[in-house]
Image 1 (cartoon, one colour):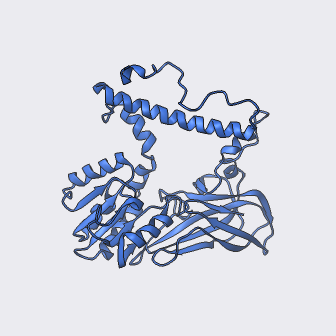
Image 2 (cartoon, helix red, strand yellow):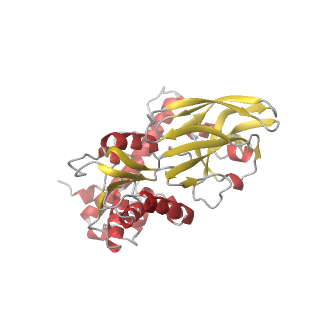
Image 3 (cartoon, helix red, strand yellow):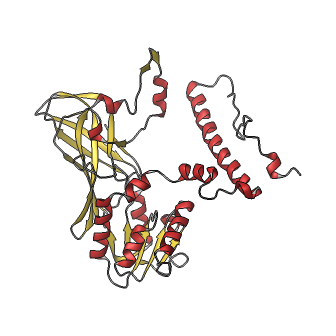
Length: 362
């Protein structure tokens, strides 16, 4: 049998992922060609990760130790860069830790979801929890959290679990249901990291009845906006005199992050509430809401710029409003399929829809 290492292609060789041929069958529609190409691209990425893994397992010199090129490549692929900005967001950290210190009962058992480096878990122990079970789906981040917890002398009080919270089971991973649920799993548009299904599951399966939750509720806010520059972040028609609009097939179909104050824009409404979620009692299922938004200026609205306010309880709140440029969170942009004419003093009727992970508006 050929050794595994001998079966690996040399780095200079052109490789093709198993199961995906470079030439699609003749007669396919353009859409099917794009579909096959998207699968081919995904297979190539998986193949590269597989090669890196096999090299590490078959050669000690290929082990991706910190500082090596292999480790750097894996870290960049698997750990989002926003973790650095997030941990350096002083306002975020102070408000989260302040809420934990104010609300966590002494001697409680807590569950922290999405631990990252373990910050909230450690703050919860310092606030008086007897033990914190904290989960992190990313294996590299989970190990960083374990070592960070150990470096801060809290290994006896914190158990780091490398899994999604939705895969946790009481009696196997947790000795009993938690007294306290702590999490900060929000993106620029609130729901993009799975806040709704995660809390929905944890509330039913992992938190004791009447258990304390942080955060307790959340609201989405928005303003009508006109900004050709922001539209061009997600759409294109021509470049250099050529029609390149086919790239729009890969455009974001839901909300995506923008730093509003960095792009030329015109605001066409006052702030308005788009949706509200009581994380303690609402069903947190996919849904929709009807909006009637009074315009404050004439123009063509390209979409809505949105942000959240997160009630942590005890008077503590997090918000990524455009007037808070120091927040590491950007704002969320929800583009209309086509720009819409609005008139000052008249209302624009819209429908906001949300899935477990995505916001759209029409």
